Image (cartoon, rainbow, N blue to C red):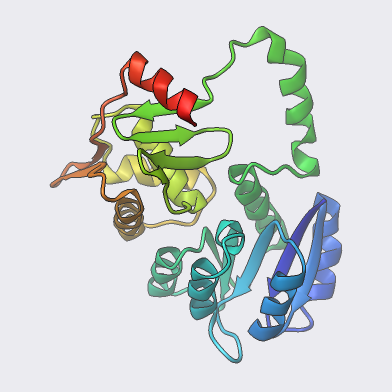
Length: 259
């Protein structure tokens, strides 16, 4: 069962939502103030966080910023932000500060559950709704050719199992789910220019509520985390590409041994 923390000052929201999400194998724990939410995070482990945008003490955007700058374990928690305003600026800023998805209030509980499932899939976790897919994968695994665990490029390695990215100097800052999905897309065809529309459609396919401007913000964040590598190039009026060539077989073998 996946454990989810809800931080929302609407005390009437948590009980019915917890009852509904339990059908999808989620255990919902609630806090009405950011300070209470921080105490929960310090004492318990959570698989995802639902964060209201308008809170007492500090707003959801500031809480998200502090979360991503805080304890290392907190930086990995998928964050779904809620907002009664549904303002585009809020959504873009929320994504820029490290939120993984955004949902406007009022929302349908089924959509919230679907978005949580998507976030956990991208984080490598599974809930009850995924059990059929897991069983199917298990029965057919012997028929498939194993997929390489690591993707090697010049100066960059992507660990597909651990969802980690490193360079010759070691591990790089943790990527959010959206940043990681963007990197995987660019790395699927190094040197190919992906248009904003292609990236937008791909990320929307991950069930994220994302806009054209958010693509630019995600690319900017990814560039900063991959620095000093000049990994992502912008082609004006065209799009973005991964500007790193796949590593040679010898270099890849050496990198695999050292990791």
